[in-house]
Image (tube, rainbow, N blue to C red):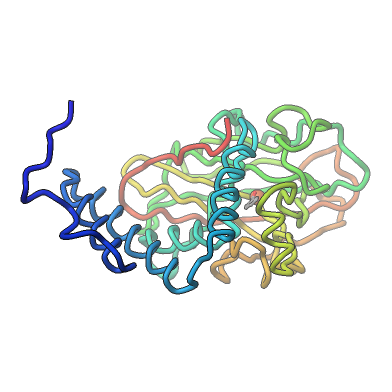
Length: 312
Ligand code: BEZ
Ligand code: FE
């Protein structure tokens, strides 16, 4: 099954005794990885992981705690909850990767992290539909969202796919909340010939991320609050354009500058969601307060690729 190593392939020159010997030896052992990108990633991972162990001089008890933490991420990850993604978000790693990969002019809308609750199962609705499938509550504030999707040069993009999902005013996504209908506050829309889309929902609120697991333990140990600024998530995609994954926040939210997953990466994502009470809501059943949000979304040329869903 395995080729026995030729003399020149022996990884360790002599018995590794020092921390540096071990790192060298592991890097040599992995040096025959055929895929060059995989080799680059794994080599850098080993160098940084070993450097981390040396820097903090990790003791054996701490090492077991780290193993148990990674094991817990796996055990806590279920069909409708992805603790590993929540950890990446709380470590700022998801935002870092997103910033590294953005390709846009400064005047274009910024991206923001995907988060753990994106689902490819979200229902597709005609423009103008209400994505709130729950019984309306007197405290809900109806929110009317309209927008245009265009290419970076201003050309409207017809038939672009706009996916939206957000938490309830109680701060829970439908997958976290047995009291909400399945796929509540989630929807997909297609832009019309002029690149326009519009839908109705309810104003979201700021909410704590799930703290029942290892991420909650980490936040508590670090004296960090678990709140996200209120937001709507969007992915916007069209052929031959880079898919934009982003979030839009009401600018006056209390947590804009301390979002616990570092999601507010750019001032252009914090926008005005005005509240009106003028009797002119764009729906006959809305007599009192309502809110509006208007967006222009410019996509960069590139590959259209929908993200994988972290939940089922
Ligand atoms: C969210 O935006 O839905 C989210 C992001 C990170 C952790 C938990 C939730
Ligand atoms: Fe969210």
